[in-house]
Amino acid sequence: MSERITVKIDPEGEVTISTLGFKGRSCLAATKQLEEDLGIKTYDAPTAEYHEQEQENENPNYARR
Amino acid sequence: MSHVVAINVEYKDAESLKEAARILGLEVKEKSTYNWWGTHVGDYPLPEGFTAQDLGNCDFALAVPGSPSAYEVGVVKRRDGKEGFAFLYDFYGASGKMLEDVIGTGAERLQGGEFKQAYTVAATERSLQAKGYYTTREQDADGSLYVHAEVRR
Image 1: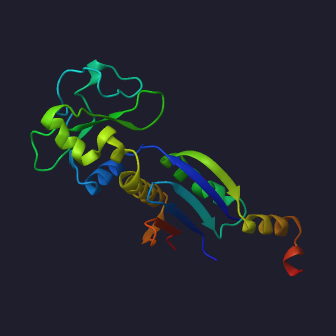
Image 2 (image 1 turned 45 degrees about the horizontal axis):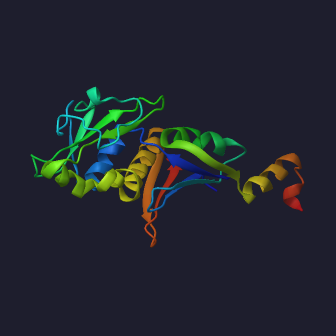
Image 3 (image 1 turned 60 degrees about the vertical axis):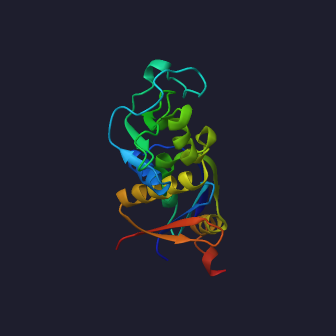
């Protein structure tokens, strides 16, 4: 899966940034500069994919179960 | 790994501000003073860190196209200890009304909605492209805009 950043800007100018396909914690680094350029971060949470990959990293057999 | 982040946007990038101003129908003027009443009588708020003596000076100005007598918006670097830009304006009299008709009573059209969205799309694209991403835009039926970014291979 290719690394992808999607930024949603709603009609009121509210912003949500999401990432997909990054390995490890590289997604955090990928959006850090963008977050700083745009303003002040008000919310930051990992997605379900984040937790799945964390488990895979901790247990190499996880992916085969 | 994936994560979701929400951002409270601040106007930090001058070029993105100019792009948003043009979308709002304003003309960007590269000059260090802007047109206003000339005397501060306290009827419009000053951004934090500014005094009446600062009025009339700017980093660049936003003007109403085709209305040379209309007052203008002065765009200035913030002085409240934060990065970014603030707006100086004056709606007094007929010249002020011409500006107010474009940016709204209280200049609210510069603080939200179409302008903020246009600014944020431009600032997002500029930031991501500077990091080497290829970006595309997509518009949703609800008016939301999406900027998609991928690394150019």
